[in-house]
Length: 91
Length: 393
Image (cartoon, rainbow over all chains, first blue to last red; front, side):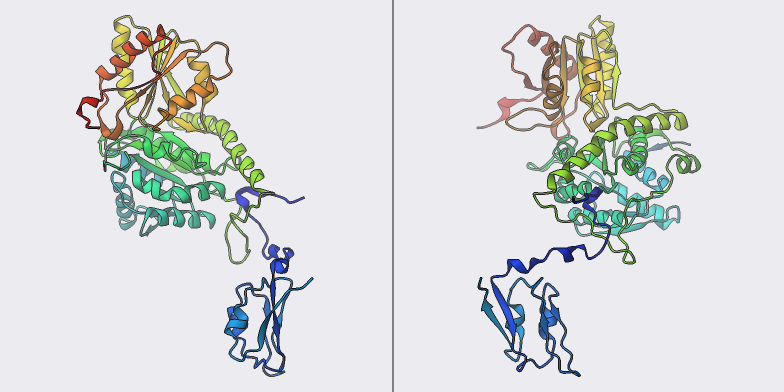
């Protein structure tokens, strides 16, 4: 049962992590790991902090967290290398 | 210490005595003297507080909410259009259970623009979840403001409160007022200890999202707090009387015990009614007065107890809900609903936009009520001292 505090206070941080909002998505960003230049512009723009940073030294591309990504497409729009494609979600 | 002061000075001095930490304010007639006075107190080193000058009343209340959420004791003042501009934020302050205290110089609403007294501004905010107190004089304005902090900050309540003082009649009128000693106020009102505080070291969410699954529970708990405030108000009023000697009641009767007609009033007009009642009593008329100090929580049961024996209640409403009547009339009528025996209840719309309420008006209200008692078809709502012949339709 949910506990309701006075003033609609939630007295601990990061409790929203239990709400996996990825189910809201109708289109999903797919990263082309060959094209990713590790610039992290998508990471900067993601309004849901649903992107894990790329590591340019280790040449590890960005990773989308589909548990929270709502499929807004900002990352694909901002990517200067065209490395993110929005693909329709299928059942 | 006795002094002769304006109502706005009384509420500002109450904020100083309460050791308020933050005053976010935007000036508006007739409450401008409040932030001005606070500014002077701070400049003189008499008060250690942050005066936040904002760009609107909406921002004033937003800043008050933020300051209160970090645990500050917060006071502000506004009136009329300013209160209306705050309206959205009023509900956020009460929903977040922040004990902000605000003085409101009760003033009419535009249009037509008018800076004088009526109660339309605070009446229009009575569903905002704020406690509402109405002062009859400057002493009451000071005392109610001080008590409002103690009531609002009580853990059983945690709700904001507004103290209404009539525009100009109180805000700008100089009256003798007993200003309590700082030491005694400190004893009466210890520092505010918030239940939760916004602190980057211990992150929390305030006023979180309330889905249909939880919103009603929030609202019910907020309403329960307002219900608990009834008892807390009585406690604080009696503690105040013990410490400072002045008695307050949610509703105060005057010569009502054997009264046939009881006039209900609120704010500064109560003094005029009391005088009229004294005069009419000399003439053998059994009239009485019931003054409402606390409109929220609404003291319906107390009103029924104190007026239920009368033949009629004449409510003086310094507000109008077009298409209905006066707000206080509606609420008192509702307080009597489902009771087998109840007085006739009539509504008198008075003193809008600062029109003076004089002894003849009270006399007229009593005479009109006497006539209406025996006339079942009598209109329950009547405008007093108004001249429809001046109006072109």
